[in-house]
Figure 1 (cartoon, rainbow, N blue to C red):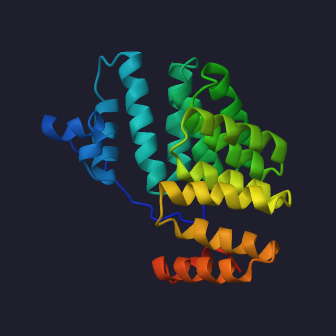
Figure 2: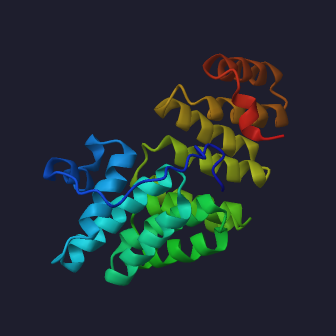
Length: 232
């Protein structure tokens, strides 16, 4: 399922400068730094001699994540591909390249990488959740349902996976089950405007006009532009 919330921001970064050690730390403690600083620090580190493969793997993963989060997808995919070449039996290269491929619109390639990641770790709830969305994007609803359900069994506190499974139920015409999953998603995250909007649509299909109007009003209150998320 392709994201509709991309930033569409591509930053042109200089890689020729040498950063102080405190700034190159951005590549190893990325949570503490803005995305451009992470990309620059990792780029400088990759030029250093004597790096062992595990360090190179980590740097490519961190830089790739920073790049795809700023919608610089082709370089991100290149970083994850380099990471896979360094450690093909590590799940993270496959896992994150699948996400980048999906954001790029290459759903079939994303599905292939999700399968490779799950072959390494079949119980990773994040990979399963992403695989669920990818299968749904390919209209493979039974496979999507299986992945979402397994992800939920491992991590029952991720509201977005309940959202995803609810959408699959709705695609299959099982609106009561969709509503039940939206109920659960909203019990985890009551400010989930998309779940409220989607539940309002499911309630319309079962003839619950009052419930539909209440959910739609609540969704609009949280996000006045929420209906634009459904597209034209």
